[in-house]
Length: 415
Ligand code: DSN
Image (cartoon, rainbow, N blue to C red; front, top):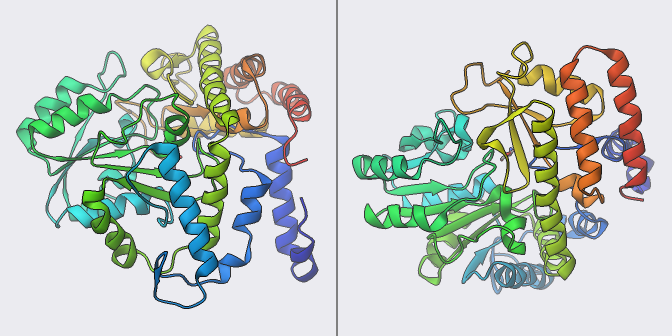
């Protein structure tokens, strides 16, 4: 990967960029929210569109010279509509969180009520956490997963909704390994006359490929990010019906953002185009098959998975029973030292600090992009078990690093 133009003027940054490519090539990226975009998406994102102001929307900009920006944004919108079957798509949010912000800003007043999943149970900061503006501007109650099964407690959610009378119910999660019942949540929203925001940030690609049920056409608003299970570069997206189109567009710009990041919109256009190819369905299905293989291997090695397994691209491991002396942070550090990169994560009914929680979350989107199949991922599961069983053993780390190097060499990245 060529950083020569950067190197000519800034060797320090060029060194860091090249070291990052090497890090991604030579270690296993298993943070469930990460992936590797194509060189085509990288090229679009690193294009001259970064120079262009294009406040407004195609055909109605506040600046001249936007004809090529219009072309790119229209392509991103049309491809997203085709991928998701959405009536209206806004491709300008800078991130999934900005996409959520647009929905709240469009539809809620300060003090209105949000009902969303607790962060420790798999929710997201932008769904009403006290540290986020949503937790400060709105009245928030949170639902949970069932303590026994680890699945969303849909009956509890219905009861809570009737008592709380929320203005909006948020579904869609960051650390939830199971299929989400959009229709069930929509019927709860209908019963209490609430809006429904489905945040598919983690599963955007799985929904696009049809390997997870779609909330598009069910929920009032569907938000997502474009760089997790779909490989369209860092950013966000909002989908809704024509009825809410103007509200959402005004809330994104000028309500919450200024000029769109047109180079990122170009990345979205290219990535959505790639996701319309038949190979993307195979990729998404393989991502889920790989997560299943990973989960089964970890269970075979004595690990406990929240909900017992997975239907999507991630597994959430609760270390408390199997490894009571190892925190999520200990496991994350030991694995990183063995070239396996994932993140410590809170688990339902967390008993430790969010800074050093009781679980680890592992995903297969990035490994699948570089060609890993179930056999490869089973070996990865064994490597994870070897490290977490002996988190301070340098001999184990060294031998795992060698196995990781072999796997990376067999599945090259950015050749
Ligand atoms: N930070 C992302 C994740 O890791 O799930 C969500 O925004």
